[in-house]
Amino acid sequence: MEQFNDIYKQHYTSIYRLVSKFRLNSHEAEDIVQDVFVKLYLQFNSGNQVQYPKTWLYKVAVNVCINTVSRRKETESIESVSQLEFGTSDSLETNIDQNEREEIIRSALLKLKEHERLVVILYSEGLSYKEIAEVSGIKFTSVSQNLSRALEKLRPLLKKHYYEMLNQ
Amino acid sequence: MKCLTNEQIQRFIDREMPSLQPEQFQHFISCPSCRALYNEQKLLAQSIKKQINSVAKLPERIPEFQIPASITHTAPRVKRFPLWAKMAALLIPACFVWKMTMKPDKLNEKEFKPTAESIRMYEMCNSVDANTAFQENMIITTVTDANGKVVKCGTN
Ligand SMILES: [Zn+2]
Image 1: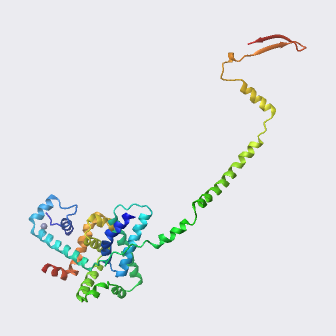
Image 2: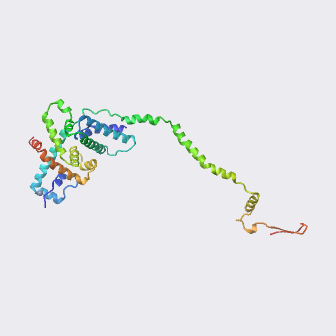
Image 3: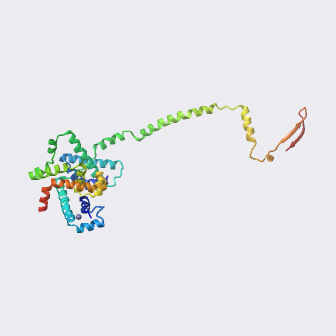
């Protein structure tokens, strides 16, 4: 179990960051991250070998996130979803601009097809195309196609911020 | 040669295989619009990465891992039956089944009652070794008269 503890400490932050990119609140995110590591713990406990813990964790995290978001879509209205935001940032500084910016990015991501959104989120995590393929279940040869399509779709939606960045 | 597609440019930006073929690379170097697209798309990709990462949150701290309750609760349940009880649970039915299957054989053995005639036949058959040469088996011939007195006696 020492190996498990090392993996836990090593990957907790990156899994948390990945999970927070999905439309979840902070409690949901914490629960999902815990749930993902419980699944890994059970693997170790039953003596199963996990060859690539990083991709394994990403894969499980992505599946749990997609399931959680889609389950909520079925049961709750859009209004209640918009309230499910991380509450920590505005308690530190009441930055309306930041919240507004986040909302634009999140809604732009929502306009993508699910696998395009997944590819672009994993890309933002700095994963290689091979890792993206393994985590998302998309063919390796289709990763670049999905990625360039997603970026093209996001271009007009995130244009304003893109030019802001260019001027920086 | 045709200009590169967005997908080809993206792979080239990310230095991912299959990257550009030699002739595509030659075109890329000599084509201003492809180079412009490369620069623009590279900035776009960086910008979108950065924007997506800006919505991400980091944990305030790494919490202590809680061993799932399902494991800690099931553990004593497993220990409720000690080893001897498990062994007994296996051995008792095994013995019972063994006894049940062995009984008919023992009954058959008891019923085997050969007659005196069959025993004599068995002994006679065994006394003659069929594997030894005929000459080696001694035959004694006796000739008796009407009163039973031996008149002539000879071997082989
Ligand atoms: Zn060109």
